[in-house]
Structure formats: structure tokens, C-alpha cells
Image (cartoon, rainbow, N blue to C red; front, side):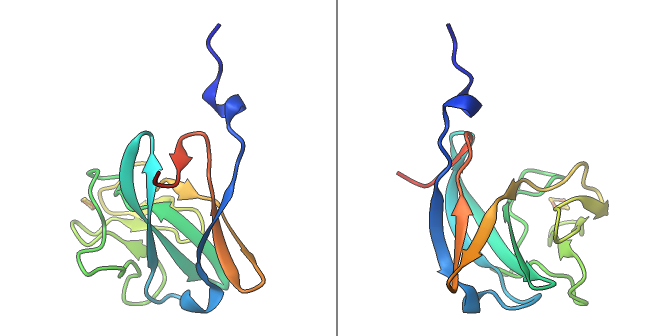
Length: 129
Ligand code: FES
């Protein structure tokens, strides 16, 4: 009998950075994850005082979005923007709101506790070995 990987996974939280490193609509903090068996960069941002993280993979073409490392916000600090062709994403959800993207970014669950930001594993999302 084949077991569903989602049911077999026990979520863990992984320390990412200090809360003070994530400033409102400023530079992201990047980190590495294994997503679907592939090592990928991911990034965390703060928007409206909430922290959010996504796999750094554009929904237009599966490539990293930050030509200037860790710069993801558009000039007004309103959207996350891919530097290649200008796809725009909603910071709290990763949903595509403009440009050539379809769908959205792959969200990574974060939490914040005692001045530390943590990311949470999922059945298809793990820390590097
Ligand atoms: S690769 Fe991101 S908009 Fe084209």
C-alpha cells in the first residue's frame, strides 16, 4: 500500500533569522530549502508588519526573481516584482496581480516568536540535509 507523503510528514520549524532583520518592505532575507526534491532559494519579507516567505521561483518562467540580490519589492513597496519581465505578486499571498505570471508564488509558512522568525517544513518542503 502506498502511503500519502502529506500524511507521513511531521511539520518542523526551522530558525530563519532575527525579527529585526526583516524590515517593512525592505530587503528580503534569503534561505535555502529543498522543494519537491530540488534545492531552491527562498526569501522572507515583512509587509504590513507580518512576515511572509516564498520559494524564489517566478510563476512566469521558473527562474529566480531578484536580479539584485534580495530586492523583491517594487519601487512603491506595494508588490513583489520579478526583475526579469515585471510579474507582480501580492506580498501577503503570493498571488499574481500583474505582468506575465500565471497562478502565484509557492508560499512557505512562517511564524515569529521571541524575536526569532521560523519557517515551517511541509511534506514537499524540507531543510537542506
Ligand atoms: S521570469 Fe519572472 S516575469 Fe518572466
